[in-house]
Length: 355
Image 1 (cartoon, helix red, strand yellow):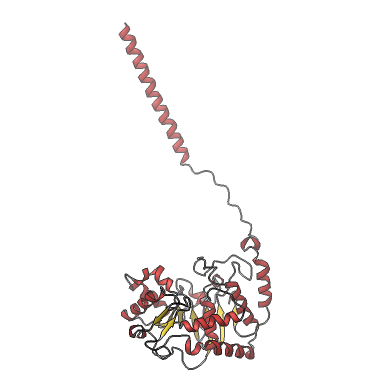
Image 2 (image 1 turned 60 degrees about the vertical axis):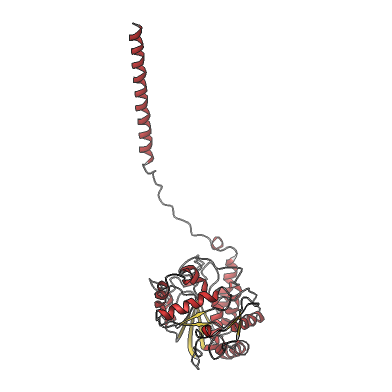
């Protein structure tokens, strides 16, 4: 009797355990099933247009003043242009000295790095062989030159045709020109600069495969490739590797080097104009050189603020990405102010907005 009772109790316990297990499984199934159902979506709410002050703190007043200065009818003032060009030429000699050549830099001479004043480099026959044989610029003044910065202001600007109509087109730091950018920035390139940091970051310091680097230059055709190889010591080896890669793959691109003496003279010149910066940006360097080489200088993509001058919509830092520049290194708003002053004086022409 007692044995039968124990058997019955055991059966009841087993049955309860099974029912509990089934109930638990059912609860978890229902919970899991419901968790996969997307919650009911609220109808999308229209975002109110952000106020200009929210887009760029403290910029609105500055931009308004810039637009006021810029809105004056532009006219070239030949006297002002000639005077400024003469000042640049007498202080910096860009026409003859901006580029290292075998004519102005002999074997055995010493190059002083413009970014590291205590560092020098003696020119060996091998290094000398990489220098341009003669001055790369013809002994004449181009009529129109376009210096194209990479500012976000060029996005959807439609300036491509106007840029390409210039006799000589200068671009900065190997910017992308294809995949839809042509309409806004053009494709013509006579000279393009390359910061050695690009070789380091994008092409593995050219220590491995070099074909991707050389193929990336096809966009620029047979343009001059201007490299600041002698600004800092760590720039020199990778810059020389870039030249050797171009030669080895028989690229039509023609590499040339900035003369550090010219860059130093240019920094002193702009300091005398009131500019305080650790380093001049590539943009103002190329605008300066263009003023010595060209009768009419047009600047595109030069705009240092995070909002568009016409409409105040937010802008990316570059027309192709939003990577930020080293603010402590360059003084972009201060540089722009000086270029705007030259625009107001009719020395060069800044293009802000759509073309």
